Image (cartoon, rainbow over all chains, first blue to last red; front, side, top):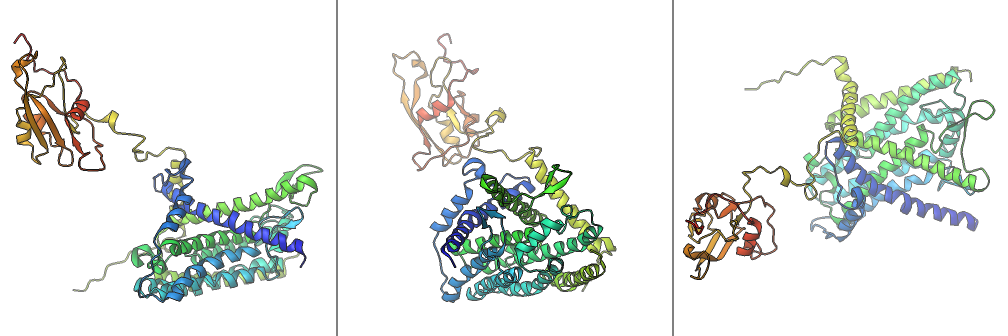
Length: 368
Length: 176
């Protein structure tokens, strides 16, 4: 543990949380409102600042200034603990995701641990405790129903979430997320193998199960982050907000932040696993056509620019996925509870399981 | 009596839901795209855009007093509008016109003419009843104030809204 490592890690953590995640969360809320408005032929918030861009700041100020009301009948300790528990896991998960190549020789990932995806699942599934505790501690029937729904939903979709990514790791042979990105740079993105050895027909064959894995994983992430069409824990219409009915002010905002942070983290993981992470192939004609890899390894300001370009690429991909999240949310109605369970247990679980065997068979019989 | 609602028989394509989901996504994306390129009509952005230019001639906005072409306040303080006003929003205190005045033969004019805009229901009875065509409902509709007192339109305010009206009633001209 040299001081250089500690300093850069601290800088990365602080930068990631306060420069990237929190502004991204608040602007995701703004984007959600604008996108939903545009889809419904409205304009959305456009009053505060140019095109309403200062709306998140106004929202934050409002949340901070509102009365922080604690109902008399709640279990105070857990009632106060729950919003934090909803927020912290969502942010912590981002630690293992490589959000860039290198910048001045520092790898752009906070913790490059060799159990990467296991860490993600372990921490992300803690998020349900925030919701369950909120539902239980509120001592009120609607939050309670929301909490119960949330726990059973999480259990159902955690399985397909975990199984869906196994094909990726069968292929990569390593749980470290930086290695997943490295593999995709060399062999092409998981669901679009047009870079690397793109002339290899086996790659295109493998892209089919990868596409299935991607869809199952994406849908499971929808369920994990309580986004429509799986937002049964909050279900405004039937449960009056679900688990956060009894919350107000900043505690309510923390649930909100947690939900959006989970969405951003989920998108970041999808990008890392299936869309080549921070990698963007650039065509190059120097010495015959090939895909050039831009990263931060070049000396001088070329390297710095490359590293920044990689980070921009990563967050652009994340932004596109977040847009897809919103697009789906404002298109599909909510599933009924039995439909949700049926989908999780009878379809996605089986599809993910069959997909693993499919990939295993292809890998076993495919001559490299 | 119990009655079983007949459920439609779905074919495998409908039961799979996926084509319907894709179709839905296409529809929402089309709406999104049309909004982005400004091809959809949206709500009027009120404080910036207003109705004013497209208000019809018969619009019933705030009532106002008018002057005639000579600059005389047309109202002769007959108090018919005060009498007919359903919510009793109008209060008139008549005063005498001095005999030295050019329009001395009119005899009366309103010393005070108050319309309480908190009470006014914009019915237009005052305009209808006025024998002098002195009170009109104009096109002002955004009447605001912080107190009840501010919402009372006094004579000056009413004349300011009303302006000059070139009407057909010319019975107080010197020639007549």
